[in-house]
Length: 120
Image (cartoon, rainbow, N blue to C red):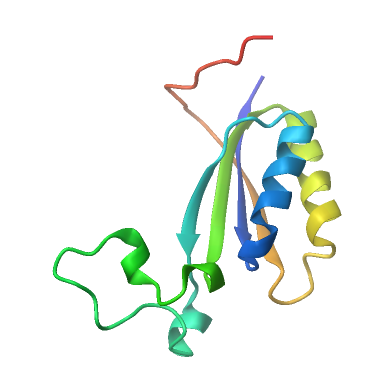
């Protein structure tokens, strides 16, 4: 069975918990979440700060992390898992064609190492 990477660029960080719960409900138990910002926010000067400390942490890069989007990704196995995660995402976010909602991508993997299978 083939593995794929599901990537969701989530515009509204307040929906992060709902997304992760929805993904878990359909059997996705591993995901990585990163702070992310796009070119539009950077151009609007709402993204990165220019007054960073000498040794900044990741959170120091953002003026208000609660306003910065999140990028969530997970490696899933099989088309059924992809279908389930996409449907769960749409249930939480609605129509992804609406601006400033999110961007959902599925990418095929040609190689993966280090995945730990979940025990039933």
